[in-house]
Structures are given as C-alpha cells and as structure tokens.
Length: 115
Image 1 (cartoon, rainbow, N blue to C red):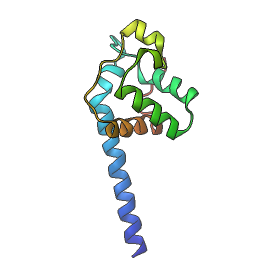
Image 2: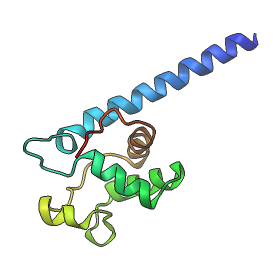
Image 3: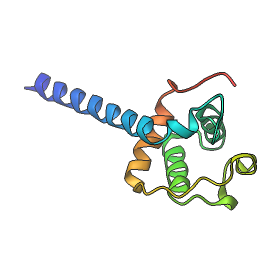
C-alpha cells in the first residue's frame, strides 16, 4: 500500500513538472529564448538577476510571477532591458499559471545559454 501511494505521488509530481515545462515553452520562450533577433531579454539574463535578488524559491516565484502579471517599469528588475526592448506587454495569463512558470524557471536550467 505504501509503495502504491509513493508511486502515485511520484507520477503526479512528474506530471506537474511536465505541465510547468509545457507552460514555459508554450508561453515564454518565443520572445525570451531568441538569440539572433531577440525581442526580449533572454531567460539566462532574467534568471540571473532574479536569483541574485531573490535566492529562495518562494521569493523568486512570488516576485517574478507578480511582475509578469502586472508589468511595471518602476518595479522592473531589468530596467536596462525596458530601454532596449520596451516594457513587457500585458499577458492574459492568470497568476496561478505564472507561478507554475516561475517555478519551472527557478528549478530548471535547460533554457540557459552562455551570454
């Protein structure tokens, strides 16, 4: 019985991680992953800034998801990026989904490159 519960928990955590990955790649990478003609800062840069200022998972996820939910020039972590790319547009993505995406960014580096 304990093994069955453990197996179910492992499967569910894997599904959750996969969902977060799909949300990230489906919503973010088109603008934030481009190298040749970027339209937004790359996630390597964004994650680096957020990790320095908000090293805990809870703070990182909260700050990133809330800023993306309501982009604001005054609270931007990368003000130089706004000058280069302009302010990120409002996205019609709910806060819960943005928290899942921010969790994926915090926990993974598969999108990172050397800048």
